[in-house]
Amino acid sequence: MPNFTETSVQAALGIAPELILIATVCVMLLVGPFLTDSAGRAAKGLSQRWTILSLLAFAAAGWTLYSSQSSGVIGPFEFDGLSQFVRILTLVLGPVLAIIASRQIDDGHSAESHACLLTILAGANLTALASDLIGLFLALELVSIPTYIFLYLPRRNSAMQEAALKYFLLSVFSSALVLFGMSWLYGVAGSTNFAEISSHLANAPKGDQLFGLLAMTLIIAGLCFRIAAVPFHFYAPDVFQGVTSAGAAMLSVAPKIVGFAALVRLAPLAMTGASAAPLGNLLAVTAIVTMFLGNLLALRQKNLQRLLAYSSIAHSGYMLVGLAAGNSGAVIGGDSSLWFYLATYGLVTAGLFALLAGVGGQKPLERDSDLGGLGQSRPAAALLIAVCLFSLTGLPPTAGFTGKLHLFFASWASPSIWGQWLAVALAINSAIAAYYYLRLIAVMYLDESAKVERQHYPISEFIGGVCAVGTIALFISPDWLWQLAKQLP
Image 1 (cartoon, rainbow, N blue to C red):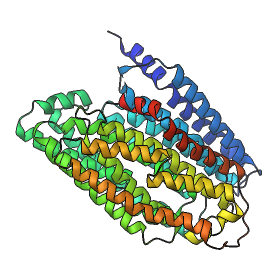
Image 2 (cartoon, rainbow, N blue to C red):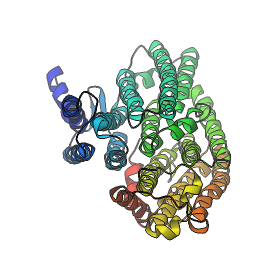
Image 3 (cartoon, rainbow, N blue to C red):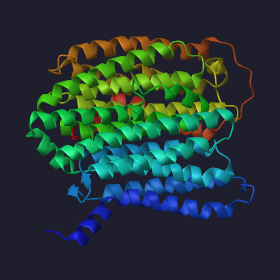
Image 4 (cartoon, rainbow, N blue to C red):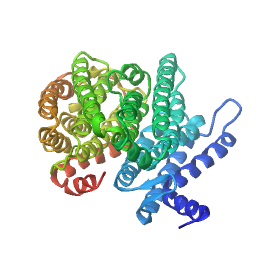
C-alpha cells in the first residue's frame, strides 16, 4: 500500500496539466505589475504577449494530459472518463476564450485577466477530478473568485460594475447553499469521500436517506446558479448585457462545464432508494421550466447579449434533459448525450462570440440591428455566424442537430415517467428557439447596413471560423466524440 509521500507524488503527476496552468498564473501575477507604471499603463501590445503565453500554457497542459497515465482514485482526485473529457474540453475551448479576451482588455490589466481565465479553467478541471466534498468545494471556489475579477477588469463603467456586483452577490449565495448541503451530507454519512457517502446512503435507514435528499436539493439549487437554470437564472441577462463578449463567452461555457461536472459527480450519491424518484422529478421539472422560460423570454430581446443570455438559459434546460433521463442501460444514455451536447454547445458558442467580437471591433455589437447588412459587407463572417446560429437552433448540417437528436432519443427511451414529456418539450423548444436564431440571420441578409465604421479583429474572426467549420465536421463525423462521451460514468 503506497505511503503518503508516494500518493502525493502520484496525485501531483496526475494533475500536472492543472499545475502548469497555475504556475503560469503565478508568473503572470508576479511579473505583470512590474510591466505597468503607477497609473496602470503598460506598453502597447502587452496583452497580445500575455495571450501568447496563455496559449503556450494550454499547449503544454494538453501535451502533459496526452502523456498522462493516471487512472483510478489517487488521493483526493479521481481520474476517469469524466475528468478526462472535461480536461480535453477546457483545453480546447480555453485558447478560443483567451483570443477573444486579448482584444477586449487594456494592456495594463491584461496579465491579471489572462491569469483569471487560466485559474477558472484549472478550477473547472479540478471540479471534475474531485473525489470528496472538500476538494469539490475548493475547486468550485477556484472558479468563482477569479470570475468576479475577470468580469470587472476589461472596462470600469457603471454597467460593468453592476454586472460584476450582481454576479458576485448571487455567486456567494449559491456557494452558501452548496456548502450547507455538503455539510448535511457529511453529517449523515460521517465522511467527505464520495464512495463512502454513496455506500452509506445506499444502505441507510429512511431517515438518513431523507436528509440525503434534502442535502442534494440544496446542492442542486446552488449549482443551478452555475448553469443559469431556473429559478437561479435571473442574474444572467443583466450580467451578459454589462460585460464584454469575452466575459459573456466565458459565462456561457465555463460555469456550465463546472456545474454539470459537479452534478454528475454528486447526483449518484443520493439518487438511491427512496431518493431517486424525487430528485429525478426535481431535475425533470427544472429542465422543462428552464427551457420554456429561456426561449420565450429570448423572443422579446433586441439587445444581442441579453438574447444570447436567455439562449444560454434555454440550453441549460436542454442539458438538464440528459441529466434527468439518466443512462438506465439504454444505447443512447442521458449522461453521454449531456456531455456530447455540452461539447458541441461550448464549441459553437465560443465560436459565435469570437465572430461577434471580430466583426464588432472596438465598437461592440449591442443590438440585433447592428448585424444589419453584414451579409453584404462581410459575407464570409455572416456565413460563419449563420452556421453557428444553425447549430444552436439544432439544424443540419451542424453538430447541434446531432446533439439535440441524442438528447431526444435518450429522454424518449428513458424509463422515467418524465422521459417522453421531456422529449416533447425539447422538440417544442427547439422550434421556438428557431424563430429568434433565424431572425438574426434574416437581419444579416435582409436588413440594411448599420453604416458604422468598425475595426475588425481578423484573429478573432479566424478562430470563430474554425469553430464554425468544426461544428460541420462534427456533424459529418461525430462518432469519435460520441465514443468519448459514452465512456463517462
